[in-house]
Amino acid sequence: MIVQTLVENAVKHGVGAIRVPGRIEVNVEAARNRLRIEVRDNGPGFEESAAGVFHQPGEGHGLRNIRERLRGYFGDAARLSVARDGTPASTVVAIEMPRTTQPLEVAP
Image 1 (cartoon, rainbow, N blue to C red):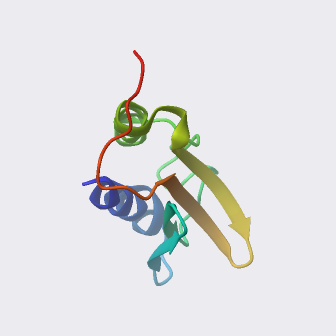
Image 2: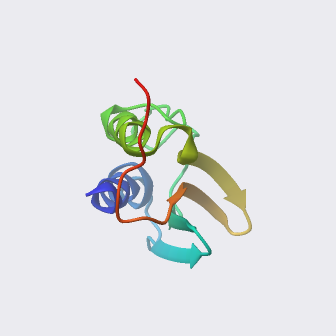
């Protein structure tokens, strides 16, 4: 469900806001005990979109829900990052978390 939310955001706030062909990439990498999921799009990023809406990294219900879900399962062992990659210009939303089948015990 987390990946679905990231892809929907890439469509809505990314490629849906441009007139050139849109591109969304989903990359998953498992290394040792970590899992990294990355969703990249060639949309306008955090700049003003064609609709005049200013996008801030980390704002909105979808990303907030993902952060809360990751925190609930993994505490400080997981993170969500939003960045702009300049070559080629892309927005990159990445999740890094422990590679496990069981949630970690997290203190409230």
